[in-house]
Length: 222
Ligand SMILES: O=C(O)c1ccccc1N[C@@H]1O[C@H](COP(=O)(O)O)[C@@H](O)[C@H]1O
Image (cartoon, rainbow, N blue to C red):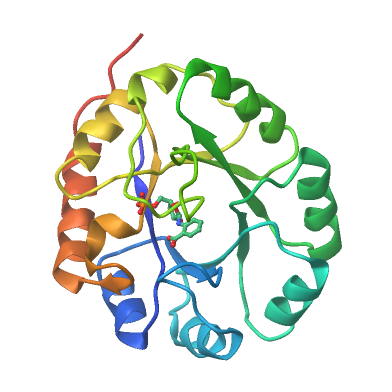
């Protein structure tokens, strides 16, 4: 079984991009959502994306985007993947995939078993599923809240497409999360920050080490 890949989301500086590349991340995420402390402007995102080395996939995170916003972003920022982190319907996912010709990763929020049917629904139209914790009612952000869900809900699941585990991951818990869920890809934002929106290179490096160590733990058979 190959290594577990990881994504670091919410990069805001060239130093962040360098730290994430140094740590061996497969994906770097840029947040285009003005309510987020990790929001980047289109011009800043372009600068950061151009600083990313070959092999580091650049993911643009958007929340219920209009076509106009996506036209603006994609007209300027060389992104590799679109991450849809709002209430986009399956039809909208398919439409955006066709319109922009980019792979789409759809975030699905999980709190209880009732939320799991959406994984199959979106698995039919998205290139990847990002399984995140469903935010508390009334939360300001649809993600990036440092909130984990009960990983037992997805242990041993059959997946219709590639998927990534997110939500409240940290250097301290990511090994256990990999072990319990069998995830081969993980995503973190607030768990590698020293303050909201401020990435900490040492925490990024520790997260990478923990992913590599966790990946060596044999995945349990269910
Ligand atoms: O990071 C944000 O600010 C954000 C804003 C809006 C939607 C999603 C956001 N982040 C994504 O949320 C998950 C989990 O984050 P965390 O590790 O629990 O902080 C991650 O996929 C980010 O890509």
